[in-house]
Image (cartoon, rainbow, N blue to C red; front, side, top):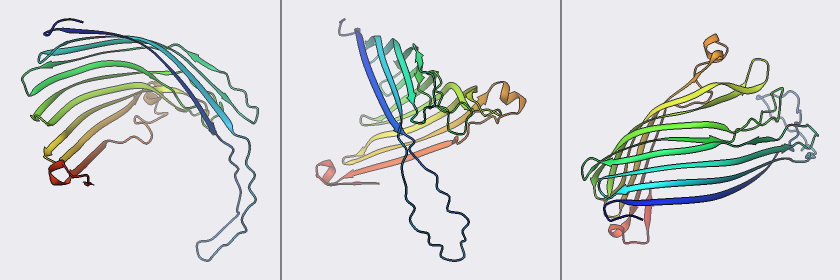
Length: 265
């Protein structure tokens, strides 16, 4: 509802999700000592698989969202939602772990401001939640599922319309969430806070008729903070974290974009 210069939109939503996962059922077989210096043939082992373990999770979310927009001037979007989250894991071995139940409240506030015809300033704040994997097999509380963790993301950036069909984006962001891993006592639990600051640069659109480009680089600075980092018990960076990710994708459709044949690189 609204006018040509100022439009409003109000949306209500109900969403449901059911996730079932089967895992486990593996067996370890010892082949004894071996050597790289000569062929070491062994008879094929007789493998009997164990019963599967099952992981069952459900989500039911109710949300409301409001959008305010003035074409060529600005836009503003706000949303709020409440989720009923449940997760249970059933181990064929009979290992008992408690069911997890949580009611996270999430929301977002994002907007954009058109500085010129070609240049747009945008930014926002988003709060969400993520499902955390159950404690691994090497943890003393194996199979225990943590509650849904709360996450937050803030970003601000500029979008430049290089041409009507080609856009360049540069933005700064920070993503924060709890950090889970196994502690010195072998317990899988929250060890601190994980935050990742970063810069993003991208160029996407049509370079010329038939030639499309999607290219970008994201620079990350992942960090962990908390008492265990300050004491030196764990390091200041998450395990397996990366510092840069770059991608370039080209699609060339022959005959100026009218051919059914295209080449990707």
